[in-house]
Image (cartoon, rainbow, N blue to C red; front, side):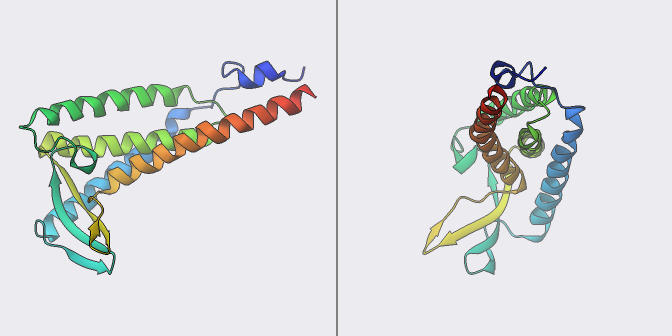
Length: 182
């Protein structure tokens, strides 16, 4: 019996991915790479002293007590626990979501662990140090992009993957529904 358009668009009718939690190895890889690079930056760089790598890229050790772009960094310390709670909650929620990924959602199966790994890498810093270690600094024409780290790269790539899957996955399902109904 061929799939109907309703079955292709209904996530409960599409087959689940076999062992979707196996993708958590990506989260572990992000965490290990993140912590290793933060350790190296903390031990080999002097705080706030840029080391030029390329004309537009420096290694600059910075400590961020806030969130992205130092959001809430000026506050007295409550944000440490607030962002830690968000990281824990998001990691649990994203892991549950990952466990429910469908067989045709491979990009989603990659994106979710990247975000989880990034969240947990930065969570480690918040809990152990009280701040997140940042050290990757891009700049051009006197304008400096806020410094970031490998965990932030994982979160960003995962978010891009989620957006891409949201847009392209829906198009793919609509196309499959049209082809199965004809």
